[in-house]
Image (cartoon, rainbow, N blue to C red; front, side, top):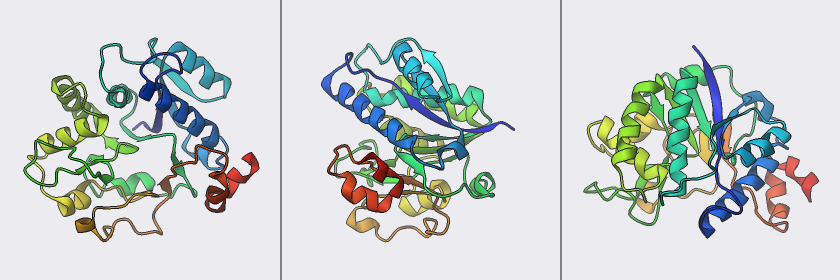
Length: 259
């Protein structure tokens, strides 16, 4: 069985709308910071890349990357985060089991020996649950604020998952984000939405936590699976300005050298 970790890069500082250019600038910053993390080599991620310039930039940084499309971004008005669905589909042809990670999702301590085996206690797809202040799943009659958080995505036996996911992707509103597409897929694949507790029991990863995340008031406390002794991946929410490093450096000492 081939296992691995996957990251991705798309976009451009000169192509696309303002939001797309801002997102690309932010991710580029996260990439440079992630290279300072002493644990990064433990996951040895392959980065799937849109755009020849992006590919060359990452190769020059020494990253293991694969160019999957010469174009840096969609040209048909789709939401830019939907690139991530294409990345998942491509990764499903490379691996029998994988974890997709955003660049600001970091390994913050050594990877546990039972990391992959622990995922077998739950479903073939596991993504942390996210809650927003706006409606993200309008097709549901309740819990419309909850969608999977697409910064950590675990899959095993990914081909049938991604075949179904791509059908949802093609049929969905082009302005739906990656997380909305994933939410619709999850509801469709598992015969509807069955509530927060059912999701946590079946799809919440054991090893991940969103550092600045706040559940909506009716969704407290954290589920039992998110026990601190297991967590090794964290959505770090790196600072984007020099002044923010002062506080962030207390939590991530390896960032202090960048001050």
